[in-house]
Length: 144
Image 1 (tube, helix red, strand yellow):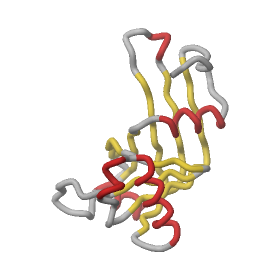
Image 2 (cartoon, helix red, strand yellow):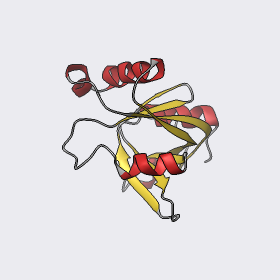
Image 3 (tube, helix red, strand yellow):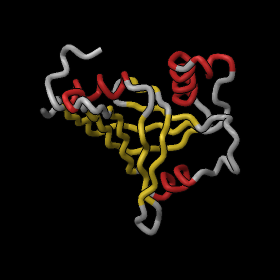
Image 4 (cartoon, helix red, strand yellow):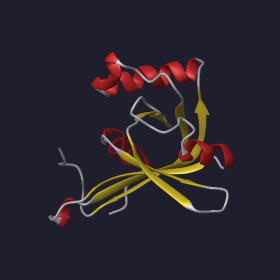
């Protein structure tokens, strides 16, 4: 059953992880799992301290070349009555400082305990969502 934009936003926001899809200059898709904080029609995605070869990650380079992105949160279960997905389509930008960066950083720290002690210091990807969509195999009113 197709969800309204509001229900899609709510279910997406409650999820703990999503997948971020970007596209490179040659049109090749790039997909990575991300943690995030969603508020209103904004999704904040940190570039955190985990060991990485560089902070110039492919997702950042892709966004700088083409800001259109999609985010997908979902749940799979062998009980197919519990299947659902929620998607956020929008435009991303990479912030390194400023009021929007600080707000995103605070929201990420409030959502993930790991960021309370060690908040993101590098870039934060901010997605302005233009379209929320979602689907479930049944009505989701009784979900946990």
